[in-house]
Image (cartoon, rainbow, N blue to C red; front, side, top):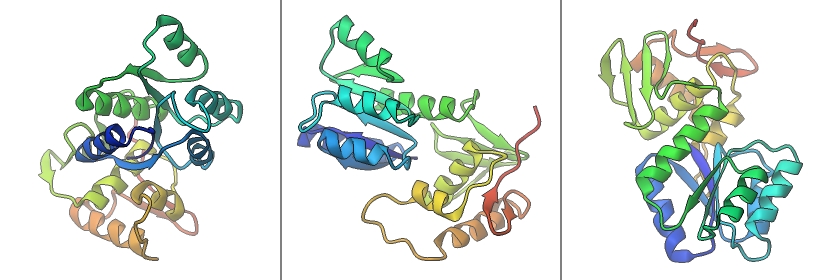
Length: 221
């Protein structure tokens, strides 16, 4: 899952980025409010961790501007501002969750997974389609009850498709979910990962919609 981190403290930001990476998140890190607002406007991220005390533009203003533009990216406010009035103001401004520093990285990761799940209309913690099941918390995938070993890219691609089960995702949309800043993207990278996933999980798991992209079928209710 690719997320945006907006935090100006270099030590804290570095620790959060490293900690979330261990939980399987791809983290792009910005250090001021104007950069955060600009990145959120791209609609690239599945969620954002937003500090309020940012330079150049306060995090609360970033949040208000983002929601005014009808950008629905889930935002978790992470701040030292612990007054009840501050928490209420942040939630009323459009934050989806609010955590007070210092934080536990396991809790932060769990809250982010919950935000992403709810944003995609997924009620269950585990994602599934037909005989395939994926556990975001445990970072594991099963086929017909048997654990399947996937590379990080294969896992991230399958996760993106399962979050959007029934919907077609283009190659560009999948690339945005698989690669963070500074990673070189080969022209056929998505196709290669799709090929390997089909070999491991079965050819029918991922459908190709010619000229549009890829999807996994939605499991009937």
